[in-house]
Image (cartoon, rainbow, N blue to C red; front, side):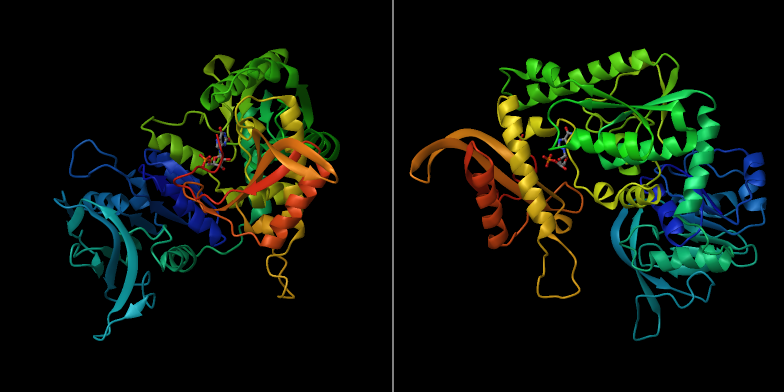
Length: 527
Ligand code: XMP
């Protein structure tokens, strides 16, 4: 296994991710673990991450001395390279210019880390790497025993190695995808230099996670707010695997869920997996508080507040619970850390308003090192159905932000049925019907798709009669990060079929429109 010491870079977890992708187990620990910890850990190799500090300033992080005495290969990345240089007798200069972004690095010498790895070869025969750089400081003198491994015009010592002691260091970031050969470089380090085999996989991960949850909570009881979304569902399944009946899930039905969602969640968790789930039907409470409210932010606040209220009442009944489990995943951790807070706070977006500190519970977040696609793979390995684990995201305030203006039960009921028809047709329509082997349907080809209820009436004609009913807008987008999004170019036949079905099957809606706005300037949700 590989030990990663974190010096505070935003992308440290990506290093772990790359190592795991190469089939080798790795864990991230803070840089200031003790020498004894390093000696007892049993790592086959150690990676020092990047970080925001400058080694040229006195009181900044340093690697424990044991890292360099452990007799295992060490790879320093960015700040990790600088502290390695500084600690082993080299010199680092406080950079006047920051180098940020794409760079081409000339790989020199024949070191076992970069030998034969390049993106292209120049006319003079130099191997070149396309890399991502983000640094101000740079190493200007290598410690004794090191030789130059790569350079750029800006950064003459862009990588260095002491093959004798198996110490390697790179100024660029091999862990980000912009460094084209990043995977190859990290793979080379863990497999060939550290000698790790590709034997780490999801079942191993589950065993490790289960052991660590047990060690963390002991005999205590845990509660978890189950939303039916991917993250809380996978967290529930994992914690249940670890502690069984000592986990109680609270599932709040605020009356703003998708069609049959409550039934599906209860069936899945309670019946199939045997998880203890308390289902709270709070529809009336939510609808009562939302009556007459039309402002989007006010609606969100009410939904968040009532959610916390219900959750508090339910958790107070579980007097033995000492832990609050959350499906926080790594991108959430980065996001809240990025807001200048030290450590982690519950993301308000994540859990409908965020649960308050007054619950007096310790936080259990077993997914906080994983990326979304890893969470999904974990979910499948834990026995959750593929269809559930690969569902589109659904906002905490639910249909509350998809019913424009005042939320009424009557509107929610209409919207649920229209939405279910849209989703069903997306799932049933293949993207490329001509390609015999293509199984990709439009649901999987879009990142998020849903119906929106517009509380305006328009005139229509059905049979011999005039109708005067509501409008539904369909929204389908494609995006990688949900920060920007394109509207999906769904085939007209598919849109036509969905429109016909909604108007024929959902009495009360006589007009369907398709949203062709990108984000920005529009947002994905309408409120
Ligand atoms: P927007 O509408 O801002 O949405 O483009 C971006 C993504 O965030 C989801 N979203 C939410 N998720 N609680 C959530 O858990 C919320 O309050 C919330 N608001 C928006 C939205 O569905 C989309 O995926």
